[in-house]
Amino acid sequence: MKRTLLLLLVLVAGGAWLIAGADGGLRREHVTAAGTPLDVVHPSGSGRHPGVVVAHGFSGSAKLMAPFGDTLAARGYVVVLLDFAGHGAETRPLPDQTASTDSSTDALQAGLATAVAHLRSLPDVDPARIALAGHSMGAGAVTRYAAAHPDVTATVAISLPSAVVASAERPARLLTVVGGLEFPGFRETAETVAAQRDDRAIRVVPGVEHITVLYAPDTHRATADWLDQAFGSPSPDGAIPFPGRRAAGGALLGLAALLGLHPLAARLGGRRTTPSRPAPRLTITAVAAGAAIIGAIAARLLPTTTLPLAIGGYVAAYATVTGALLWGYAATRTPAHLRHEDRPVVHRAGRYLLVPAYAAIAIAVPVHLGMTHALPVGDRWWLLPIIWAAFAVLAYATERVTGGDPVAVLATAAVFVVVLAGAAVSGLTHGFVILVLFPLIGLLLWQAFWSFLLHRFAAPVWAIALAGSLVVAWPLAVTLPLVA
Image (cartoon, rainbow, N blue to C red):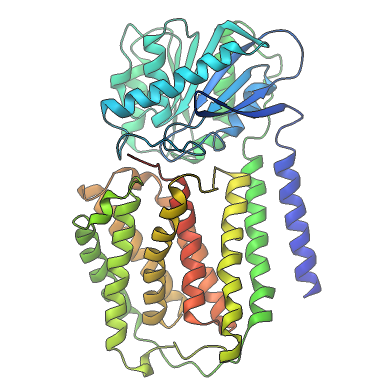
C-alpha cells in the first residue's frame, strides 16, 4: 500500500509539473469580449508583435488548442484562442446540430470577428500583421474569414473539411495541413485547395489522425514556419515547445486516478461470495448486438434528439434503449447465470457513494487541465445528469448480463461502438461520430477497467454502473456543442 501511495504521489507531481510548465513563462490571460470567451497568450519581449487567432474544431475549445498558443507565442506572436458558440466556456448555443447552416456559419464568423478585433486592440500587437489558424470546423471558419478579409496576412487550415470555403482568388498565403491517417477526403480537400494558387502549400503529417494531428510537432512546426515566412521573420533555429506536454500531464493525472481507485475500493470493499458462472460470452455478444441495432434505429425516433446538445440526444437515446433491452434480457436469466450476488455486506453499501464522486474528479480534472474544457457551463449542468442516466442504464444492464466478466464487458462495449459507427455511416446520426471513435473507445476501456477493479472488491452493481457511466458521460456532456 505504501508503494502504491508513493507511486500515486509521483504521478500527480509529474502530471502537475508537466501542465504547470507548459506555458514556458509566457503571460496568459482569460478575457470575455462581446460575450465571447478568449484566452490570450503574450510572448516575452517588448514592442509590437504580429498576432494570430487560433480556432478549434467541432466539440473542441480554446483549451484544446492551447499548445498552439505555446508554440506561436514562443515564436514571438500574440495569440488569441476563442471558444466558438456552444463550445468550451461559451454558453450561447450553436444554431444547429451540425454547424452546417447559414446561421451557424454566421455565428462562427461573428466569433472570429470578435477575436480578431480584440487581438488588434491589444497594445503589444501590430494591427496590420494578423494571421489565422484553425482545425476542422475552425479550419473552414478561418479560411472563409480570410477569403472575405484580404487584410489577413496568412492562414493555416488543419484538417480542412470542405474546399468550398476557398477559391482561386482568395484567400492568399494559405497552408493546408492534414494527418496521414485521416480519411482520404481530408487529404483530397487539402490538395485541391492548395493547388488553386502558387502562394498556397500542403503539408501531410505522417502517422496521425484527426485529433492527434493537433499534438504532432510537425503540425506545429509547419504552422509556425508558414507564418514566419508570411511575415518575413523566420526563426533562426525553428525550435518549438513540445505540443503534447499538457496532454502528457493530463495522462499522468488520469493514471494516478486509476491507481488511486485501488486503495479506495480496497478500503470500501466488502465480503465476497463465490461467483456463479455468467451466460456464455458468445450469447452475450449476440444479444448485445441485437439490442444495439434496435437501439440505434429507435434512437432516431425518440424525442431526446431535441435535446440542446449536438449528437448527445441521439447517443443518450441509443444507450438507454440498448441498456433497457439488455436489462430485459438479464431479467429473464436465472440467478445461476449472473454474478449480481457479488456484493459487500449491507451496512457498507452507502459508503460506495464515494465511488461516483471519485469518478467525477478522476475524469474532469485530468481532461480539464490536460486536454480541453471539461467544467459544465450553462445548460450543461442539467444535460449532464441526463447523459449520465442514459449510460448508467447501459452500464447497469451490462453488469447484470455479463456478471462483471471483463471479456464480456469489453465485447459489449465493442458492439456498442461498432453499431454506433454504423449508425453514423448510414445517416442515423451525425457523421462526426466517426472522427471521435478513438476517444470514445478509450473512455469505454477506462470504464471496463473500473468495472474489473470494483468487482474485485465486491462493489455493488449500482456503484460500478454509476461510476463507470460517469467516466463516459462527463466528457460527452461537456464537450459536445450546445445547440439552439
